[in-house]
Image (tube, rainbow, N blue to C red; front, side, top):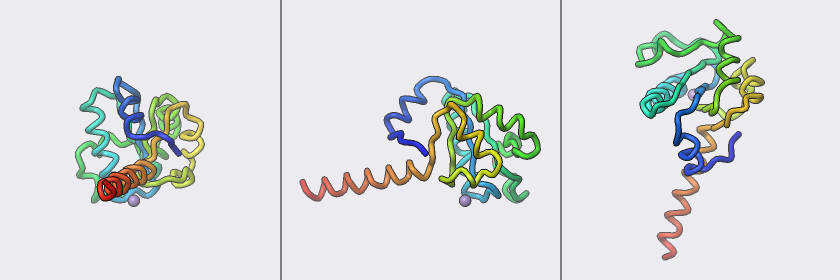
Length: 139
Ligand SMILES: [Mn+2]
């Protein structure tokens, strides 16, 4: 979904951006928690941030700070698509195949914004750590 490395991502976020954050359908604690954590962090950094859930999620996750700001996509699909369409960056958290966001997959795919998948980043970070460990062992 994305080929950004960490320095490139930092570069992209080095000025205020319009950021959309989304997660897999039927969001669980991982998906909502990571999305809201990133939402608060990026807002603190001066970005304009919107969180779109592809479906509703359990009430017992709605205590999280910022949960009232999450747009449940199917309640206003036009607004959800408008958010993806206008985003400079679309963070895709806790999934890596666009069919997992149901009818919003094409809107994310067609967005001119840079797509960033948390799973790809995790893999990249992990391989960098392995690489760092290996070079430490070899030196
Ligand atoms: Mn999950």
